[in-house]
Length: 445
Image (cartoon, rainbow, N blue to C red; front, top):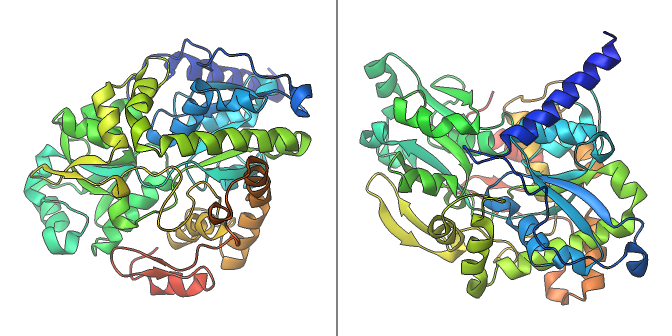
């Protein structure tokens, strides 16, 4: 068999696997084939769009809610787009499917952990095959957590490990003969970055004192039950589901680590955007309106009902509603806490509009990649990180969408930096001086 035929066979197998697995953490296959809103969109020609269709992928966590809501509530259709939104079996499946592209039976883009779009563009996570991507918007802030297994309740793990759990990780290794195991569903991206920051801020070296694992989502719950892992970093509703199912407890939320932090993003293949710039703006308009709708307190219950369906998340409505409202049971004691400002944010915050793709925030993920030497030879300097960031982020398209929607001036950023950011441990990230941020970090690789 020729190399080309071998490649096509491999890609076909990946796509079939995505369809067959069709979910995250044991979700059933997506048999709906995409969009839930059956209202026919306006013809692309009526809206002046170059195309009326796009295929997007999603993983069933709260970051994807704007995409699902934009389909179900007709926001995409309103702007002339028929979005085929399909559940991906896993992050690797989403990556492989965007390499295929919709023309090859895959997807044009969708929801991504960072810096996946940048690294797909550079070929760093696609076996050298470069598929340029365009980052269009941030989908959500906060709404992620680090869950710990019931087996380590004695560690009393919290956001501030220095305060509540001094020496625990070393004593765990001495007691069990094994390092503490912490997992996530995709390496060298959001979920691993959050758990690394948490550990390092607590004085724990994640490369020396802890064993970090990439674990398929479907194996997570059982892994926490049988002791093959002691912590798991992912997006809600899964940390909350782990608590509700009494498998573990919520040690920390990412909002505690960094309030109003950058999370997952909408990114699309650059060739699709280049060919369909007006459609890209229409896509953004649908996402923006969905984010505004999701952020309203009176819509949380309906949003939970929409997301809960078998077609989308297949999660009980109460679990989703609690997560959307920022209702958590925190720590080993399961202390109830309700604070919408510390839960998932889709539009408004005290640091500005969530949706806008601030380059200062997307750059941070590349700096953390440098910190941990995730991509040697690809990102080895601040200059390289800035160049990759500038090539990938298209905030101009977001601004065009905002203008066409008639958003008030207060909701439209006037610059690509959000300014200085302060983490829970007192570390400051100044986008004007990224090297100073890197130099200030005590634990790094």
